[in-house]
Image 1 (cartoon, helix red, strand yellow):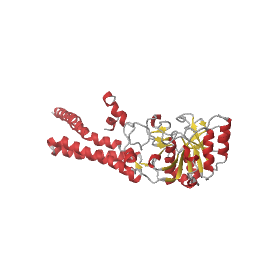
Image 2 (cartoon, rainbow, N blue to C red):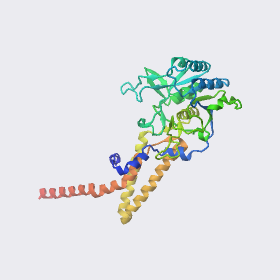
Image 3 (tube, rainbow, N blue to C red):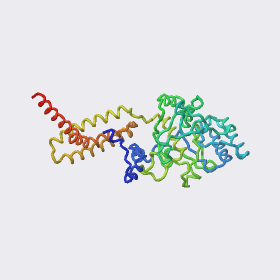
Image 4 (tube, one colour):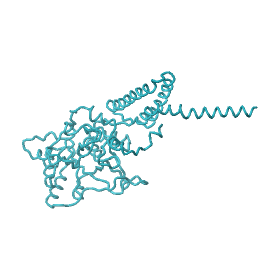
Length: 388
């Protein structure tokens, strides 16, 4: 039955449905529909929109923020090459005044070397800016490098040039709370699923628009001692743009998504928030998933074998009803475990066992068993002839 479930279907009729469900997971429903529309804001993080500001404008924002002494400033933007000397000078000076500055780095390739498991290229901002900062890579894991796939996870650390480079969110959390981040890293997971807190649209984080930092009437004292994340979130919050926006499980249309729903800097904010809250997503071992599938398959075959003997013409109707109930229960269990215990379990094989067990049993009864009985009968006849 497992082999049958792995047969690739190439029918053109099924392609639209396949495309719609290809990027869907049951846990998306938990994020999109079951979690509160208005979560409690994470007061440790303030996100600042840099919009389309030039380097002098970003420097002015940082200078304003520095007056209120944030614990860390992280900038989800790269400054690879010199541009305008005046703007570059202003930005470098603003960087030098930040107590803890984190700039993004990036890997030249999407995947590490297959043999060494290391990246051979690390791209950083120009030395005039980078000298005042530490770095963390901003590469986000997207399934099959497809920009239309939801961002569900990130890599906490990677090896480049035989040294460890931490992810941008991990590096910021590490400076803000080393003890908590150390416990996170001790999980030693190659990939961590993001336990999304929410978006700026539902108040999960404090967010400041481009012009808010230049408004003398706005009291910014609340950024004192906080993590400040700066990045692009449109020219302003009122503008609509798809630039630097990603699909996430929080998308309201979780099947066949139409528009990306979250800026990259907000994805980083969710990762930082998860680390600091210590509310991680735990993934059930593969052995648990296979064990559940085997047990369900066995129980279904026992039940359907019994129904085949006693139910007569009602057999097909009863098995379909039971399979429907079991499918709903499996979906409920997956959602319940994730929503209540933040445990991610893949019961796809179990679902295949439920859906295929009835037909598999009928194939066994009508083909395999009859062939076996026929061969057994022929063997008995042959033995009798040999005996006589």
